[in-house]
Length: 479
Image 1 (cartoon, rainbow, N blue to C red):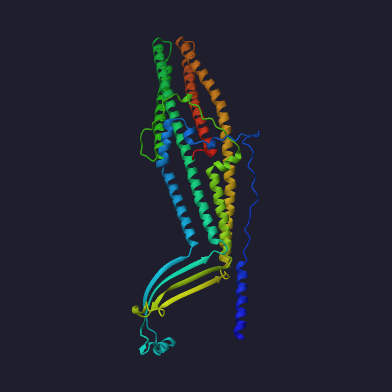
Image 2 (image 1 turned 120 degrees about the horizontal axis):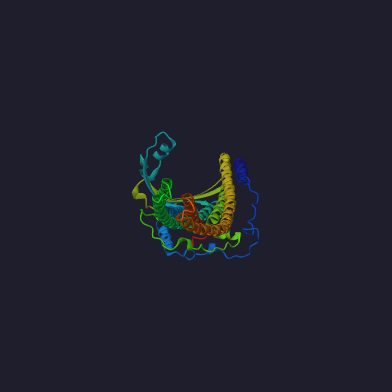
């Protein structure tokens, strides 16, 4: 009767522990984020043609640039580092998958034990015969060969959710790699167009130096004819020296830009092969923005943030499952004897065991609550990061589309300015030769023309790069 009551009490206690273990806090949720606008401008755009879906080999037309990008995709160290992160995430999936399966092993052991004669075990061994007339050995040997297995039964899907989280993180690293590729391609193209612009600026500076040198010779002749002063000669001389100094500044920038491209390509300094065509005749690639919702499918960083959010939500489920009772099953089977010669004496040497443990957390619930709170906070972080990534993607595209439009207007005006200043140089030179204007007006005209030509090249470079970056911002480049 007493044993029956104790059994009832133990069942009641076990149920209480199970109820306490199953009580888990509820995860916090953030407010709903604002929907993505229907268009990038003030007018509604329903055109779904999106340049971001175009392959980069089709988007870029310059074969020299395509060759440089090919080398960068093979040798760039940052990209290779990202590829190793993918391998790490892939191995993590294997680890999580292994936890779902029973762990099975084989154990072989040997030992010896000497117990006191005046103990319960020693007294029992002394009066026990292994066989008729054969006493239990003292000390007593122990030889075992057995297979064992341990398995945590995934009742609450804790292990399965953990594996799913690892899979989503692996996919997130793949998208991270794609994002690195898009940025790498855009950076190579940006540096390439910068190099072409510097080449063009260097050519203009050389032409200006030649023009200024000719003007210097004229003013020297005029001085000899008493039609100009030494001041004019020195002013023209200073202007020539300034332009020559600018030439070396541009040469240094060309060297640095070539080395920047070589760094992106993972190679030591060497000359960068590039086109020799007139830079100002290059046309930026035509871009179609499509609709903003396509950013969710095309942008690798948006997809990466989404996958990391899914993984964080699964982490919360895993942390919540820690509050519930866990079921562990263990088993062993093998042979055991005090002498090796008896190991395969059946059935006397056979050993086996099967055990199931149901355990619920009780004392350490504060630690589990803290881990759950941390998992929930990481989930909210991932959600906010996802919203921020979408907002940033939209604003980047909006800025670049506006920049393309404004740069085109600026380029048209600067082209007219350059044409007007080129004509003014011819006029000022003719007037200077006939002594109808002084040297100061000629110097200022040449200086303004040089600055306007350099600015025009900068504007053309920004136009080309704006097309590259809107292509990247739309999610293009990784295909």
